[in-house]
Amino acid sequence: MRLLRRSIVCVVLGGLFFTTGCTTSLVEESFLGTPENAPADPLSPNGAPDILVLWQEDKTKLSLTVWGSSSCANFPSAIDWNTGSSNRVNITLEAPADEVCTADFAPKTYIVAVPQRAQGASVDVTVTGPQKGDRFTTVLS
Image (cartoon, rainbow, N blue to C red; front, side):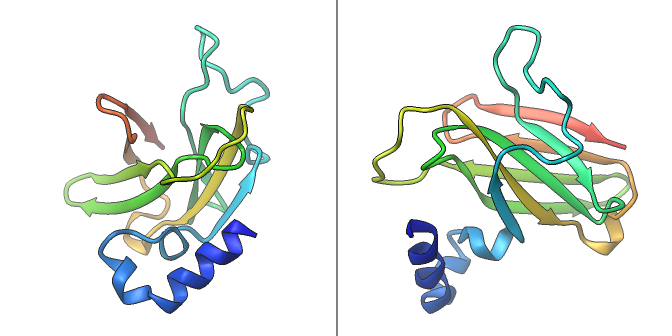
């Protein structure tokens, strides 16, 4: 119900949220769980889950999986595609504001469209989290 309410607010106030990053305009789809092509054990060697970024649909989309409360996971608030001599994407995660969260720990995946100029290419991905110092970098090839 919250997602529906948030989506309606984003549509109604679209111009207002455009500058602050409404998730429905940045993300094509989101779901609890990991994508089908995720590794069987997506945990890092120290047992903590990393952010998981994978190609989807013949490199026309990418998936971004984050771990946290299933009821209010961090979400992409800004996605900036920079292309030059190499393709780069910077994704900024934001924590939901003023929400009561469940005390569980689950993956949530966001599907993001890749601009045509970057489809199929090697892409440097940087994800910056809501906490100071939260930064994850990987290369999709």
